[in-house]
Length: 259
Image (cartoon, rainbow, N blue to C red; front, side, top):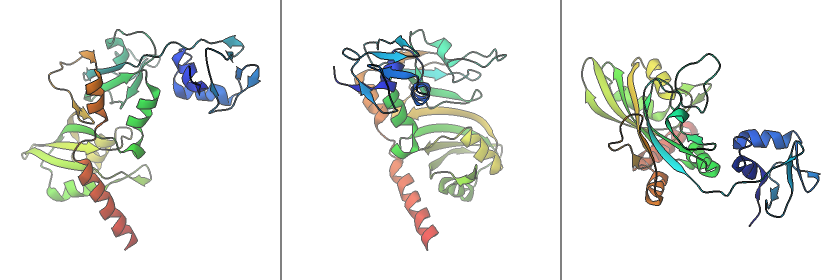
């Protein structure tokens, strides 16, 4: 068996999430063959002795699982609710043992497509903005949204002391009372769409994630889930076509900043 990063082996042994395992290593609580290791060190679980707080771990045989679920409104996008919060969690909907990472959390008031997986590497690739992975939303907001407002949103809004990444927005329906938008993004700050919509004077009425990459909800009913096959995982890894438009907007913004 080839050597793997110890934090990955620890996660496979259900010590905790990858991030938690990294912190344990940084605290000097992990030894391989008697020596305290540093973050990034590798080991072979079949040949090396890995001790966490003095106890030997045995990494489970890793079989990647990718689960798509249609999160209903009112469900938390976490494995466990905080003390005193009695709302259901996304993990409670899925009857699969072991630790699962969430790819692209949604706030409790939002709904739609989420992915849960035991593949920490894929979780990082699909979650970090530098990989330009796309997530698509169908968002209904209050009032009629003008083209000028859409362009302002697409170019980026100042949020948390930095400008949001360029995105692609299409107006699907519009009336005096409300506007429905298709929004394709490559980043996902906490409650980003809702906060930007508030800043622009169009509070969100309903927010549904419809796609991760090019994988869509299809006819999956609310609260239902299933495991993705290899082809569907590949589709999920494919960026939405709007990525070309997003990159163009990013280039335009850089030109304006340097001119």
